[in-house]
Image (cartoon, rainbow, N blue to C red):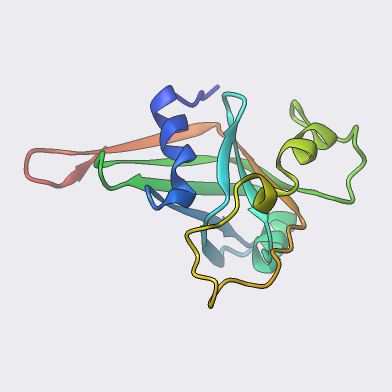
Length: 160
């Protein structure tokens, strides 16, 4: 079982504040990849990463065909990056409160993270390009089963 470290959790906390770059990658059953940059990201418990599900149509199609995802995160100041891989699902606002996915309870996750824009308003987006209202449809959850770490060596190259 992979567990998120305190350092990983701290980096995940600064995604929307310009401190890190996060991408979610999924793949269709026939191997066609899809990757999207994410803004609303956090950790949950010690082994989950949550992302607000806004307009993730291709992600949703891919997860229905192949429920595995990867999340990459790079923190440029710390010069440290990780890739988290594992089963992935979308917990929809239409899910029954008692619906379970691994040890996540839909109602608990949605009560805490179902209205991300109210909890963490996206103040870094200039008003002239911000959408009038963010439409969150649920939460994407990734259960971290594998963590790949990349640290810079003395020559500045990434090594595993």
